Amino acid sequence: MYASRNIELCSKDCLCLFVCPTGAADTETGQIDRDLCLDGCRLCVDACPSHAIYLVMNNYPEPGVKNEELTSLMMALLERKTEQEQAARNLESAAQKPGEKKLAMALGKSLRILAEDCAREAGFMLPQSRSVRDMLKELTETVDSEKNEIISKLLREIGKVK
Amino acid sequence: MTIPRNAFPAIFSNLAKASEKQQLYVLEKLFSELSESMQLKSSSRKVSPETIKNQITEDLQNQYPEIMKKAEYTEERGVHRALRWGEKVTTLQKSLIDRYLLKGDEFFVENDLFICEACGFIFLGKTSPGLCPVCKAPEKRFTKVS
Ligand code: SF4
Ligand code: SF4
Image (cartoon, rainbow over all chains, first blue to last red; front, side, top):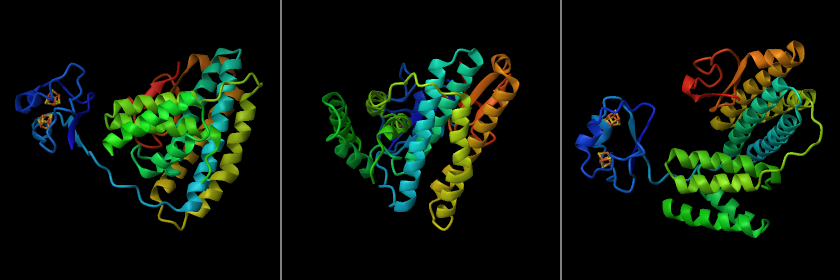
């Protein structure tokens, strides 16, 4: 487990810097350096007056098995949301009037968020989960070399955190 | 389960967000890249707000009720939640298009649109709505469309 700072809550009171034994809490980016953070130490979590620090797990349990019929229904819904998102993007690029363009842009973004929610419920919630790894491996057979390169990097990275 | 080709951009942009939340920034970047590389190019096929409205209306009349009926007797809480929020957000998308068709382009130029990044709710007004009425995310999760 490592500490993570919610930067929007942090009031820069710096009490975490006083207690952190490794200096992990003191960085330029404002985020805690997870490579220096001691597993489960949590001194900074308790010291922070703004409740701005929380602990992130290193390992997550494999998500439970989902109902297969529902998963495919959510996948079908995801397909529809994506088609609509695409339609909104086409409208956005073809729109002549500024209000119409704005409407299309908002719809496109909103539909992407709905599509992403469907994707989670279709079984792709946790990046390091088996379903995501299997899906990536399967995808390598059907995509070009440029995408394959990204996928092999991804699988390597996921292997490190799993 | 076969995954339709057009589903990958959203699957991967979502995984990028999930990586970012765990501070897995390398993963975030790679998932974003993959998402973008699989994005379909926008075509010049003429689309009108009415076309999108019709697709959305079909979801509200048939898709959501049917999937909800199937989900009713299962323990899939995430699916229940996604369907409820999705239905509300979609209802509001439709009413937004209706307002556009009714009030005209000027009205949408004079007002701003704000999107809840957590659930997709679109709000039309002069200032952001504070708490999201659909998912209760705080004001800072809203971004202005511009
Ligand atoms: S103690 Fe809390 S408020 Fe102060 S710098 Fe650390 S995280 Fe921010
Ligand atoms: S958990 Fe401990 S080591 Fe990690 S940042 Fe907080 S005080 Fe430092």
